[in-house]
Length: 127
Image (cartoon, rainbow, N blue to C red; front, side, top):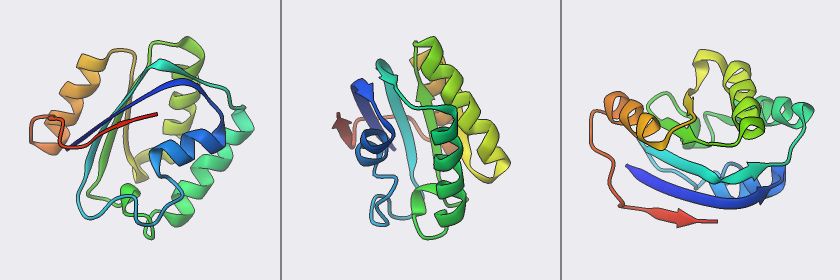
C-alpha cells in the first residue's frame, strides 16, 4: 500500500504529474493508494474534471493504476477540492475504485477495508 501527500495549489497538469496519472509505468500490479490532499487545493474546472475522467476511463487498461484490482482513497479538507473530486468519482462510476473523504482517517479506514491490508509508508511521495 502506498501513501502520497501532495500540498499546494494543483492544476490539472500538476495533479496528473504528481499522481503519475499519465505515466503507464506509474503502478505495477495490484496497488492501494492513500492520497493525502489535506494541504492541497485543486485549481481545475468542471470541464477539466470531465476530461480527466474520460482519460482515466479510456486508458485504464494501459495504466494499471486504474485496473480493477487497484484502489485509491483521497482525503481533502478543502470544500472546492472535495466537490471536484466527488465530480470525478461520479464521472468514473463503478469502473474505478475511488473513494473521496473529508478526513484522512476515514479514507485510510476505507482503503484498509477495500485492500484488506493496513496502510503503511512503503512509498511516500510528496508534491
